[in-house]
Length: 344
Image 1 (cartoon, rainbow, N blue to C red):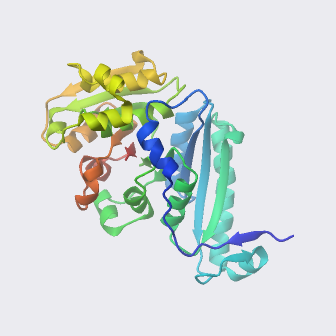
Image 2: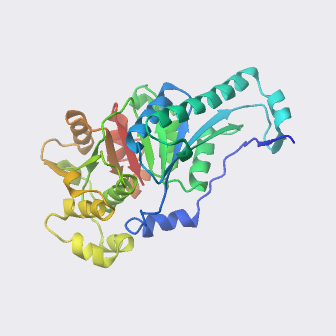
């Protein structure tokens, strides 16, 4: 019996109520003892995808309750819009030799990636692969899968062109960053080996949401170190955190206990990490009053102290600020050879 392929020619946005509920109710109250961490890894068989595999192997070596879904989308113009379901034999006969070559390369790359992850402590049973042909946009297919599968993160490898040029010219990674706000994005730039995490904190709920995401992902990780970082420059454009915002996400009792202390700027994110099992002895505080621009301070600190990952919450008002949408986008534009997690 012939297999059936579906050629997707257009992307239709899907936003589920379930995912929205996770954003407001489940930050602190996850049952992390039983919840599997699902990571969608967007690959394209390039060296930039190899950087993703290296990063994930370092992050998840010998950890349980994780699942990596390696996803590669190969574009084809073989089918017209509305063609719908297509028989496999007809499809393979219709695609160009170049498309067939890229399809074979993608399948071969997936096998090699699973093998590499296995050699570095990520068991094959915790990895799945999916190679898909599409007649539509590649970033649309990735966003659709990320939302439909309710993944905990989407991993993107960034190409080695100038960061400002990338934002101007456009790319799949940039499209995913801008359009997939409801799934945390991990942008991998270069070969990253350091297991040290730098988390800018400014007292906002966006920063705390980023910390909660980090705490969930690092559950059981014996190697990671987390540094909570604050600079006076971070308060330049900070909006006040309302009581209602805090209560909606974490509850009144938790906010009263942990958000009203003199050191709540650091204590609250520390508490989120500790409640999800991350050891206090691997949490550090770092404060500086140097510099005027928070984005430059963050990138500079990551470079000086060899941090492998910057974890940032993105403000809701970012969507109306133009090309560089606040501190998080500026950090993404400037940072090199580091992973950047953007939550929100």
